Image (tube, rainbow, N blue to C red):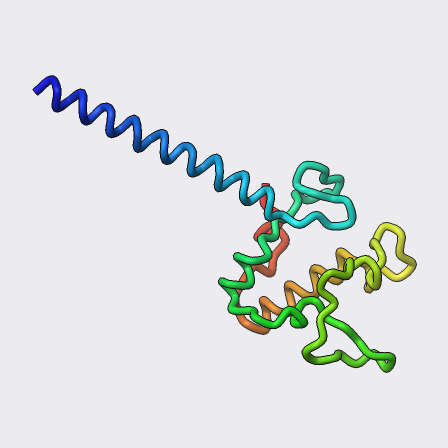
Length: 137
């Protein structure tokens, strides 16, 4: 009986160690997968609300988004959306100035992130639309 209890204790220890390591790696993976926005990041947030960890690949897989241009959009010289053309790899701030420095806060980077995400979530009737649902402490 004593060997049986000893075996159970060892198995529980191994299982707990495995769970602990999984949680550590999962947290690290989340932090590594967070995109920074204009120098703001999960470790360097100066905004009034907590930083949003946006996990790009997990989000798109869950949402069924396959076309990069749905978020990484391009407009032609007449301000019309160019279908099937992506601005992926180009910083969003290249077209959307940082709100803190912009004379027009409606085209500011933070305003555009909020508009893009909320409009998509509202149209699909899925995903967070209230501040605290994304900006979690």
